[in-house]
Image (cartoon, rainbow, N blue to C red):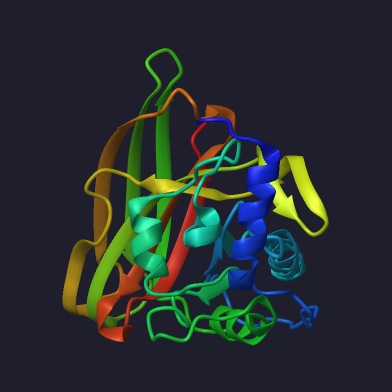
Amino acid sequence: MNKIAIITILAALAMLSAGCDKIDNPHKPYTPVGGNKTVLIKDFTGVRCVNCPAAAETAHELQHRLGEDRVFILSVHAGALAQPMGNFPNFLTEEGTEWYGDNSSNPLFSVDHVGLTDGNALYVDQIDTPVSEALAEPQAFDIAILNDYDETTRRLKVKSDVTATSNYNGELFLTVCLVEDSIVGWQQVPGGLDREYVFRNVFRGTLDDANDVAFGTGNVIIEDAFTFNATLDLDTLYNANQCYIMTYVYDKSLNGKILQTAMEKIK
């Protein structure tokens, strides 16, 4: 990335700060009920958004409270405040920009896509109830991920098995994502710049041909199964020890509502 004077960076940050939503209210605790239904929180964030770190921390506190094996977070860098400048990292992706749509501020959230695809993006203090309610929904599908990673060639083979755990009627699709955790880099924070900020659960993109994969339309019967296979050559800039595959199933007839999510480390 090109280096520019820090004064120039901070001046640009000041001009863009109007698009960064301040986090005022802490989340309220909720206790979920139900079985093995999982939930995906998409955190639309930016490296130059001063209020995004606090929002991310609030979302992670909620995840810890409700269970890291049932609540997943995907940090999607999108919007004006995610644009790289100087030594700020570039986490932008085509898919993330598409998901972000016409929104103009950060941080924003969706819970199982609800609150995003219906045009009403959520603020972090609004996600507690939707997460709790989503966890209480009946589980419709089970997802098993098998990763086979070759450290020498950095080639990753991914197998995602989706099995219906109940009868279901809808327009079913899946998406398979690459996620990298614990990336250290520049992040704008209130009062200045954190040059050693730890970015969590960063969305690196979908695997080739693994976005909007159709696997069922109409009636799906319990124990019906679908398998998706993909191969990926892992970018040399990514830390394989901190990379994960995330697979989620969603229903296009419900505005893309996510029905189940699973996440597995690649090695």
